[in-house]
Length: 150
Image (tube, rainbow, N blue to C red):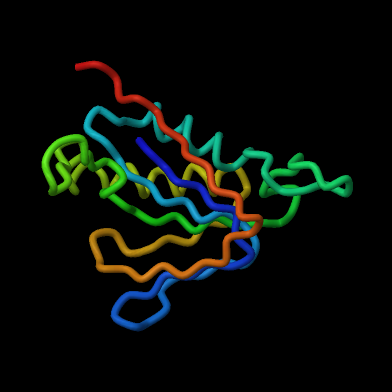
């Protein structure tokens, strides 16, 4: 699994010109499920995203988590994060999990983040989405869990 995490003051997803999800202060998490990912990776990712301390405290230090600031997560499937541009001029998406594997794992990820007490909104799996955000900071981080060998 790979994720790009952006601290935002607001973010939204539109499909076909219609807003389908939005959050105020929180994290926009773009996620790619990769071949070999499973429930253990979902649990690890959910705990990481829900407890990540990237919000500033009264001293201006990144010391607060989503729960401590009343933030939300906007979770957006983005299989292109699993792409490789190491060879050729067109990306290879061989590392991405097939949709029938990725969709339930992303649904489990949203539920697992919510189980940590963090509200979650999601994009629309497989849809052409427009994602709009105001990156707060800017703060952008990359998280990656290597799939199990096999």
